Image (cartoon, rainbow, N blue to C red; front, side, top):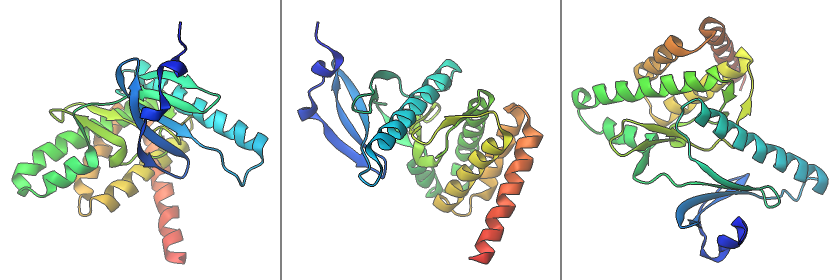
Length: 230
């Protein structure tokens, strides 16, 4: 029987995106439309250290995805992990759009037409992040580009767990919220009231809410001080 790697012909891969840490491809894997995330080596690091760090980050990403799926949070299904080449083979999400594009499209509409849909999306994002934090999954890079909306815009899928890790610390969860807040408001200016709905929804579902929001406020204060110094 052929191995998973023999089934997948790398010559048919199409490069979708290249970042600082990884390349993302589209391909077919056992006749399924598949996304492959491949972490590549860093020449400036010692080879043994590079291998250790890359393996750990690949493992953390897979653990986070599986932990979220077990908790009922929508993430891409993981088909196969090749630790020798640091590749993760994942489900491609068909008929989807990023939350970033969807929000920007809604903001082009009249305020009345967009408001209810924006509020519903904000509640969904807040609920999902609370559920992630309740199982101690820290995303690390949560932006509206890393949230997909499936056809109908009612179900969200969280993607790109490349910076994720497992932690029960309230400070890590506060920082995760801060990252989302800064990304949200810089990508979608003048939507502070919408992000407030994200927070209110989060607070209704998350555990240790008061401690986490306190940490968020502390991180915000540190961020403002850095901005003033800069």
